[in-house]
Image 1 (cartoon, rainbow over the protein chains, first blue to last red):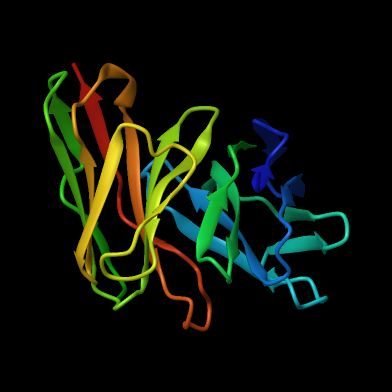
Image 2: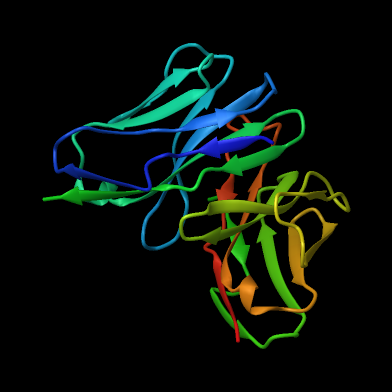
Length: 114
Length: 114
């Protein structure tokens, strides 16, 4: 079965510090995309960052960056200079291009302490 | 601005009722997805569709069916609602032809079956 695993149900970080959220995935496909989504209390899912599997360079979006290890099937999210507004559920996901399948992990609840 | 709209934000239904959850997207996306979100389990894929009248089962299709008669609309049907179907339901759409392939989400429907 193809899966996405987030091993940290909850994480906490002090404001202005850095935190890393873990994600591993399992697929036999070679053509796929990886995503991190944020879900604040409003419930609206928001895309944080995206990584194409064929690209070796790690994606970066302002304070958000990923560590993509394709051989290890690992895709962690680093949040730098954490802000109170970063508090949310974070979901890791992949999209398989060949069969249009998109799966998510169980999520990590991030708390940011002032 | 891209938009995925779910017909209801909150819904209360009785056991045994037939329930329709509607989702409409205005982005001309080929792919549409229905997920169920439960605490600790993340988003679990119920069904997805990659074209009109096409559907594929996800991880938890039992007790659900779907309909996609038009490209912009993807309906989730609970044939006979049961209390264990009380959950948050999220609809999403994406395009494999797009630059990003990211999924865009509706605001979610919180369904309670009593």
